[in-house]
Length: 150
Image (tube, rainbow, N blue to C red; front, top):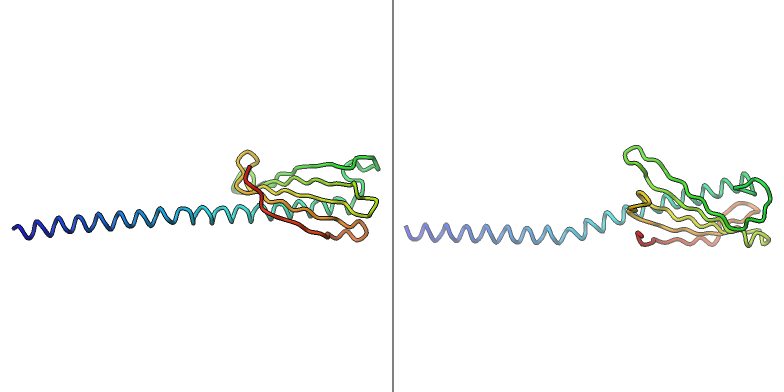
């Protein structure tokens, strides 16, 4: 009888040890899962920011005096567009800023900040800036990088 009781207690302690080790491994993976989700959100925000750059490029190629349509003295303007999603309320949004201070050199500076998710609780943000050559409407001096989720 004594040996059977000892083996039962030993088996319970061994099971408890295995459960504690398993929970420790699960806790270690949490950071990796969060890093993976953050990488996906930044990739989504990058795609949204690139969409903003292309949107501004097309609008300026069609109308050099975008957004007013007339040659006014407005050198800096910004606009924001939401991208609807089928599964969520918003796939993201981009804010484009167009700087015409160097227009006399044949260059317009465009900056696009893409946000994955809603603006109130973004999952990821990404910024792209480039110079748009007004002769052939091609980008040059392309710069990009991830932003904090503020």
